Length: 262
Image (cartoon, rainbow, N blue to C red; front, side, top):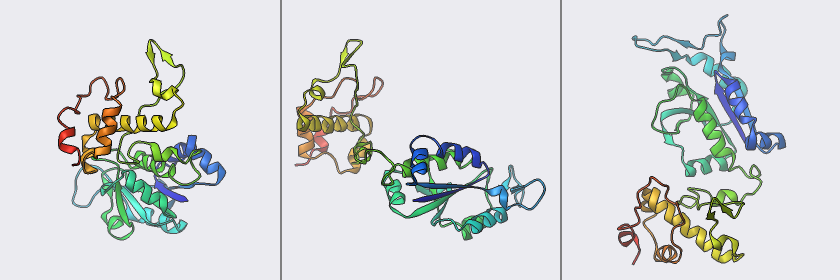
């Protein structure tokens, strides 16, 4: 898969994409990330990419011509998505959709905005990483690279990992433990040391349900509530210690009766 990123801070994005999982995937040729400097599309000595907005107002606006020159010069993969608040929210489903395609491109805004003619005539859509304000699209581009890149086949060493993580099945991930088996008087749950893989799988599913009910009941509601089988799993395996976090209210009481099917 090829992902192109257009930015006035290419070193920021390039540095991130060269590290860890993404960096190794690029070295193996599984993932291709190309980062383009929008200043390459300028023709003045100062390499100016911005100008004051027509009509007045605070801040500066990214000019259309430098952006168009760079985008058109490299034959970037489509869709070309502007990172901005007007786009569809990046969630796990959207990340899967992007990972399933042949590639896409990201345009990082800066300052007050991009010239609206870019939005109207050059890009194919917008993508948002959340309802908050960033100084520019570079951090959002890095979030998108990580969320999508790790889902591309061959990027992760263990492909099953992506199927068991938070949001993969509409649930938060179950709690994880590693050695030592006892730490400061707190032991790893016995079931995880039992060697009974079927029981371990049931325990993990139950803990994922406990965490999601306690911390993200909206995810349970989006799934249409809990099934009878899931309610049985919760009854079979109590929540592990601290599964909802020390400061989180326990929302299980009064929640299950309304959500259990049948």
